[in-house]
Image (tube, rainbow, N blue to C red; front, side, top):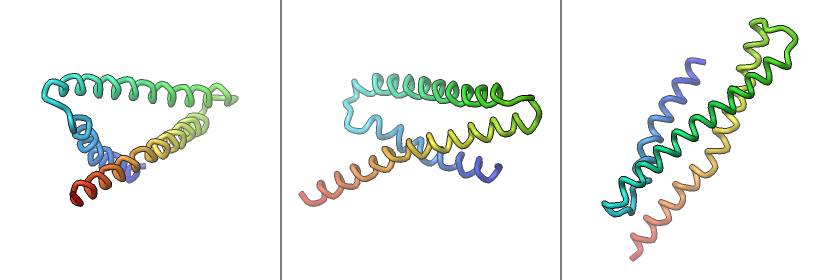
Length: 112
């Protein structure tokens, strides 16, 4: 678990800054504050929504079990963990396409 969290934390740290920088790419100076507010709002809503979904999954798993013992609780969190991996995998699809568009833009600008 510690290794998975370490890799996840390093990955988030390595991805967050380039994503935040890409929000401001191509914007005029006057547009930057609006983009900053919009990206922060989307981060807050996305984080709250994701937490609510995973909490609902845990609660559903706990209510479907017969007794709330340590194994039931561990199983509920294990299920939520796998759901979070699934959500992360789904989020990876558009993230990978972002890199392809940028490399295509770089190639087009170098050909000019």
